Length: 114
Image 1: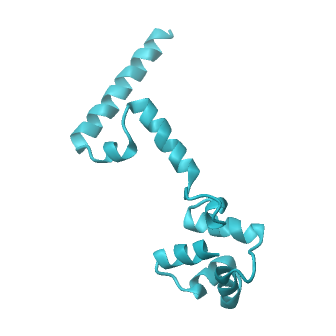
Image 2 (image 1 turned 90 degrees about the vertical axis):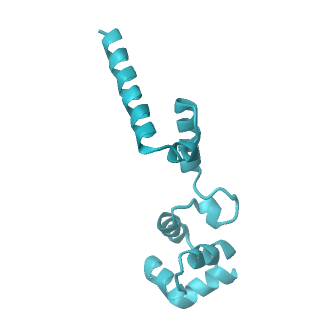
Image 3 (image 1 turned 120 degrees about the horizontal axis):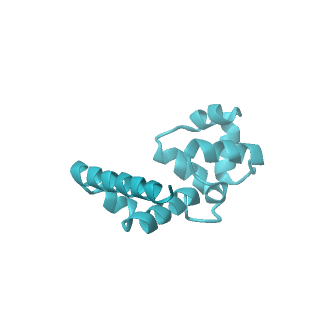
């Protein structure tokens, strides 16, 4: 399971660190990383939560780390007309203007429904 090793090394962790997270021996983590053993569904779930990725990502069934975040990004882009990355590049003043305008529109729509 190369993804587990990849995720572990990205965070600068040792196999012993992961062993503590999943409450198993360090040697088991080595077996998972080498493909000699497969982790249980429960272990996969713990690892996915710990690394904030999907189980499918750990199992190499997808290259999308967390599809939920990707969906949020698409929805945000559809709602405000810009990607999360574009929004993050705005100045704090520009972000405040967007928030203020959104609140203005919300209040207007609440007034229309009365």
